[in-house]
Length: 390
Image (cartoon, rainbow, N blue to C red; front, side, top):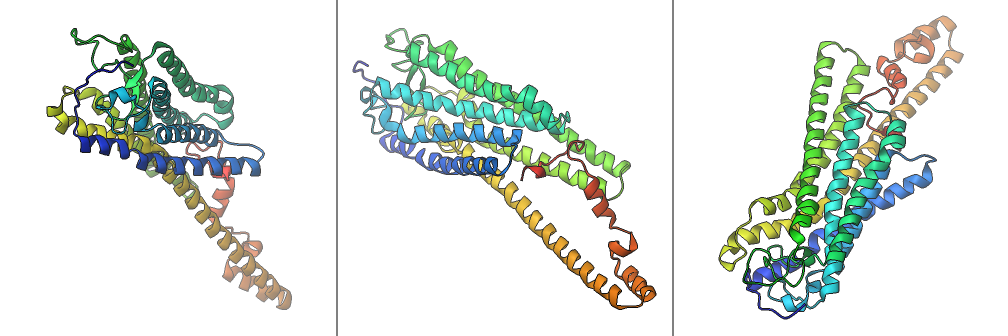
């Protein structure tokens, strides 16, 4: 890039804050994503067959880990030194900025992957598609779409020279003309990225809004399905089996909505930046700076939030499994004592004592909830919470 005078839009302290703040969320996201990758790969070794949910989480976490690692390595320094007024500590080249732009674009791929996760929950809960059907007919596209979006636009950005320093979100390189806004200012000649506008709108605005559209639709369908199940339960269903079905529907719906909720918390800031676009001038830094700060702080945080939801689910299932194991052990010990008493007592008296204790081995009156639990088939349960994954 040629040396050119660029008017700064942030103060020196603001540029420093924008350069350093991204290391916090990217580090946390890398740790969270790595923990999910380790857990899923470990579970693959323990089971002969993996689940679609696990594979989607693995793909999403791998993409988030690569993105976080890239943003950690190619930080603000990767911005070309000729654009030092746009980023704190800039001492890179056009090549380092282009590589940083690829890693920044992977961030939008993670948004689309999250949308595919929401779509998977919707297909399982709302449309009641079986695991096998999704795995063989739909799952390949759930992985292919976000990966191809990253690959195609990264190649276009590299080939066309579209990855350049961002002025508002200081310290990042992405689809941008250089010098900034040269395509709209007739007095400034463009050096790179002259025709970036259409590509950027498709790559950024299109990807973000498509991901938001998919997630909003899936969220609405999940909420309606959960409310419909609750209505049917109150009106028609009775007994432990219906209660169990409702609880499991509520669990999987809650988990899906947690992923969606954190997605909105992290992904809304680039959208705000697309909508609220004040002039890139120093006098407007009171508007540009908070948006840029929240974008760099929250957008890379998705990996951490996904890990919190993922591990909370695992810990809840482990706790439930431990609790049921203790109950089963207690019941087995109780049955052993009763059987010993039966052997030592008069048969008539032993039968009466057994009935009094409610032992199902002797009375044949099993606990109703236990019967329903054994009869429950996850393939027919529209609210399968995937307990058989463990």
